[in-house]
Length: 308
Image 1 (tube, rainbow, N blue to C red):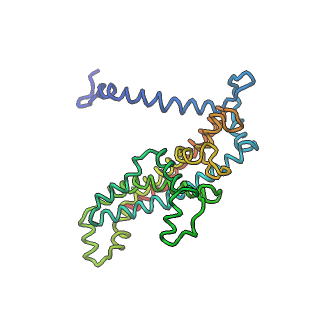
Image 2 (tube, rainbow, N blue to C red):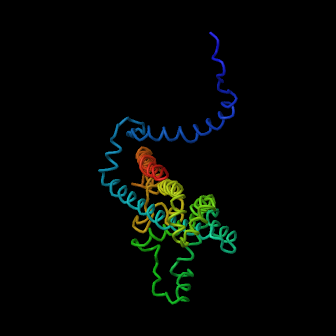
Image 3 (tube, rainbow, N blue to C red):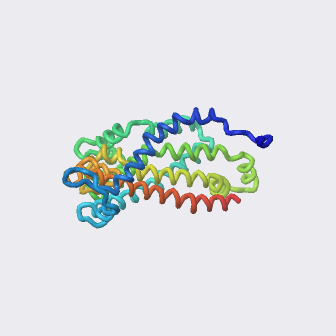
């Protein structure tokens, strides 16, 4: 039987080029993820052998007095951490991008300065801000005194009611460059003809931004929001650098990443518990998966219908 005329076979050389990347991704990403999910259904016995326990680890995570309070606290703190980034970081990032595309003098310099903290080490960022906010030798109190706001100074990192917000704002300061650049790229891609037409019709600068520019960058807003969600629920390094594995004071800065670290590596109940650590990691994966699916089937669909 002769092959159909005009039909092209799949070029096998493409597989040759893709094979190394697929192999590396499978070894370092797919296999650890699958193995972690598998491990969450097992528990060690007295001889440290893995015994299949089904959903017992998940029941223990939600009901056991040693794990449930810390899990709930870490989950709530993680959502607060995420909301601060969405409301503060992404909003300011959009406004900064709008200013940078408005033709202000020195926009390249400002863009570089605003993006610079993003490329710095998290360890350096955490150490510097600890020095700045230190109530004994930090410079934050002196700076507030200079502007007449010294009465507002408190040991923000040492108070349970303010530590999480303080660390969240430090994280916002470091990573604000990423949403700013994404919004900047979206804004400069808007045709000048649309903006000029709006101005000819008598639209003010604010109306041009809100009625013309913002609807056109709405898909980017959704992308930035979901990237923020994924990044925040994988966060660990800044809080670990500034507040340690116990995420003090009194676990007030504890999020899912630090809770997982303590459990898996032995600082939760003073004994490493890989099975419970894998269970926490599986819950983090499920939370991120649900967030991504909600974005795909809700926000992205609304944006598509809006564009149509």
